[in-house]
Image (cartoon, rainbow, N blue to C red; front, top):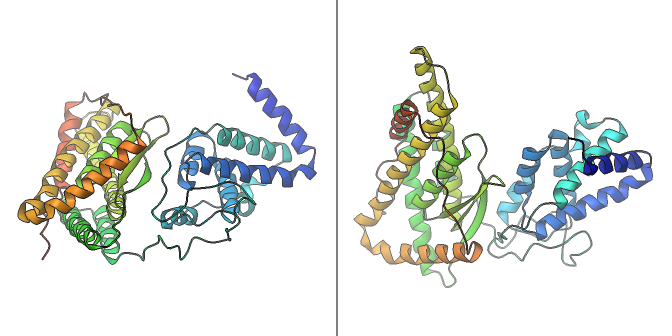
Length: 380
């Protein structure tokens, strides 16, 4: 329905289209709106995700361009923020599809600005060693363009995480379930060993790390089941997750090494689940059944439930084999829980909906068994 808000937007777009002299001021306002989003707790990947979800590709490219422009005025914000900047899509200046008439471009700009101004406050995710995100151009006396590299909170790329990433990529690419299972198991084993190594080193350090947090998109369809899977992966890797259904992401709290492991494993398990679900659906269609939404929903719910069970079993193995790890892991769990409760003093539980297809549930359990993570060797 065409409402008063849209009528006002069209009028403003007409005025801007007729006045090329306003372009520079309009761009400056856009950078200020991006900086305002940072002050309300948003990060580059969050803005990209919500723009992609609510608007279109021209808005997304414009948002990326504004984020890059604002980055020149920002303080260094840590390696995770820098990685998000590196992953931004191409901006309008480099995309021929956005060179339309002035009215269309002005409409795109105003629709994006309206979304940016309406973004709610989020829990801040300050990275260890960084100062709180700040304002807009000209507001940072100590800022310098490109100040993301060499930040004191940054760590060199972990060789262990590189090996884990390579193993999971192979697990996603193979067409053989047994090979995918073995590769996923090895990856989870390396995650556990790497996490415990980091925990022991931090415990001996004069100033141990503190828990951080990141946001991971939980995209439709079947986002409830995907959020359950993410929660299971987070719990198995000494993290905690809180799902924001309205904005389409989960906030995961934990130590940095564990957060990286959660991001890698969750992404890989989603890819493997999609592959297994497509294969199971093909078998169902061969038997005369049409593909249904309830089959997929039930499949992913069962997959998440079963993988969660297996991950919990795997997570208990190294601790049961070496009980000296208990005090270190317990202290980190207390720290993670404390950070989570400070960020989210009030949470609610959600009942998983739409799980009613028996065949989908059965196939999901079978797929999760093939993706099992297995036991992990204790530290030498």
